[in-house]
Length: 636
Ligand code: ADP
Image (cartoon, rainbow, N blue to C red; front, top):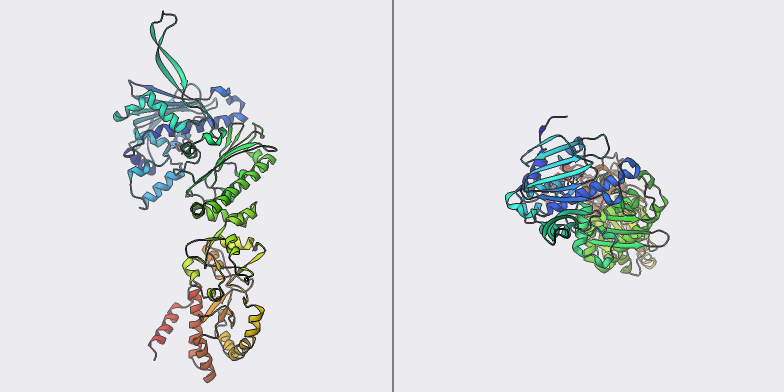
């Protein structure tokens, strides 16, 4: 038998423990919810292993969680006959912080983003560690399911150290014993425990039992009062997704959501439904109000839990939802899948595919309804999960038609309120043919772009695509409602109607002739930088702008690729100049007077520098640029 070893907690665990212990948070009772939730997970995992390892199998009625108290020793014990833990598992599970919400909180605490507020910690599912809110000594006695495992005892006072040693335990499972602090003895009371279980853990699918001792009139001993101890089940055990919709109140949803998601905020939206017919299943899904911090990490979070005929199968069935809906939490319970289904079998299973089709449609429809019925709440959702949702365009997720209805973009139309494609199309002026957009690094940059000038003058709205994923959205979404999505920073854009073209024909031709020489000279001066210099049909006020070739890479994409450490070839863009701008007129005159005037090169560089700045790119030679500006400012 291994000797008793004393070890130290990892720093972040001790940090969390200190917070928990010194928490002034009033809801101390949540420790019981957390321990029951862990016990229920442990039984779920055993039941799942037993599906393939028959030696672990038990009668369905045997799984249970037991709460017992010892009034003299001042202890409360939560026992389960679940999967249990080996010594190694105890060390790695109890010595680390698995809960992403908690980890996130600690990070914020470290970086000073959150005040070290004892009240605040109470909002988290701090899991096992919440025991230390009420106990000054915690013992975990656990034995892993499977014959070869011995039991282990783990003990800690929450003071930085814990001990671990081999021990004896009959059968698999875990007993967590809390030695209650002096001011926490109320948790020994039967009515308190009953109330807490009812409030927080009623839906737990296994019986939560307790030995209840009552005075009863004895039948044998002539009506004399005797003490009788009987085991009572404290929870209704009704799986929440099996209840009728109107039977579940918001508090019950919130508690259940916490249990499965480990999130500490209430969900934004509940989707509860029963599919009948060819595919039968029940789904209880939640749209979270807040994105978990690991949403964009490759192996982020756990998705929807899959049950088969009420038996937990997995909390991470990736095939139930596409990646772009990975934020959805909840339960799907199918009666069509076989009980002995393995996780590998779930991949590419026809029933799973049908369920998936069904729930994807349902989730997207719910979001469309939310957008149309309660736009403010939808905006909250979109701020958290809009980018994730849009990833679906890139990898061709199903139900693109619904996805299209869900995207929102800021635009030149309204300052603060983003617009959907439907709304955009509905308010397009009659003469406008395409849907116009501009990509860029952020809203401030694109709002000031000279490329918008002609659109403003025509009263055409332009969508601002400033999210990194938007670049991939437009690659996949080439049109909406029969209207082409057209980049305003690309190609030779001409918005004039046939009549306008006719009207301006002479004027344009005259400009072309007038500016022929200047354009050629500019082209020569800027040969190394730009592909072409031409007269612009987009500008009304500014002197110049840069645009991408019809198929060439634009500035935004170049910036994104560089940020992703990709090798980007330098793509020359096109410099467009405005013939009506005084700067161009002056340059034309300088050229006409003396084609070797040295100022021509300086002005060409300045012009190009301005174009770079207004599109949000850095100037090539900032020193020379500022020197030229200073010279100009100090010249008469
Ligand atoms: P969380 O439940 O959020 O993962 P906890 O700190 O509550 O975090 O628990 C950490 C881990 O310890 C659990 O994920 C689980 O692996 C293990 N654990 C806790 N309680 C039990 C139990 N009763 N039986 C088996 N394993 C448990």
